[in-house]
Length: 353
Image 1: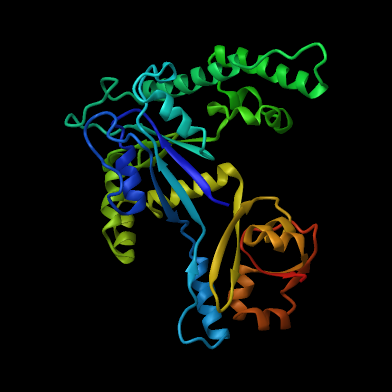
Image 2 (image 1 turned 90 degrees about the horizontal axis):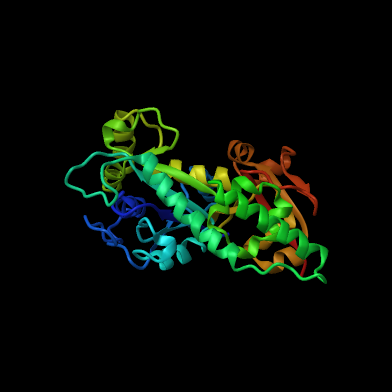
């Protein structure tokens, strides 16, 4: 699956700087004025996964290859969306365009400015993270209320499903008007599915990223603290230098690693692994997905013609040096159609012709 993370926030909070750092190149224009980003900037980055290098090394040895097979990590698509302003729901700034782009995202990464810098203007005045967060959430909620207001009350001849849907809409209107977000008003998955087609903005999962100064990185914060400037510095360093730099800051992982990990946790995503002479690869799936559906992520025909899945835990696969010894030691499990995939499963799918 192609995970889309939309980076949103007020103008001049550091969204484009963070986006550039995550992509390790200057793809988005980072400028000290509102609406430096108009059309969304899009970039695909690999999901950091130390397991793939080890898989490739084991496969090279087992298959007696001259070089490592290609390594293909799972990927995440980051979208840098135009800065929001107060009144966006009524069309202020680039409001309508901004909101339409947000609807396409799987998860929203809301960047809130914490760093002090008198040289970078703040459209809302002094740096105030609480106020900024409330402005964005209010605009998203107002846009959702507009969407809900366009829904017609069902007729007397309405089906049970249509009446249930209308009940959800009425409950959402009341909740949003009382300052709540849609995802907090309706938590039942079944009821959420009844209004899924509306693509409500405040129903989407949202992570909050505090864009801090480097000396604020270790301060206690309820948000995920990332210093966009530090990430920019890391982008130009070797892997060894990055580790040393992070260690000097008291960090184990980069902001990119922590952001992607948080997104996976919030969306309930895991990865299974495949390896062979063609490639060593990670595949992103939803936690709880059964083997045939996971096989379909590789190719739709694999789901239709699924026979079984040969699975071995990653640690066992590495310790035993690949498929041959893993089978000899009884570590390979032949799983059927009801098997629920586990994170780190190394898999060979068996499919019919």
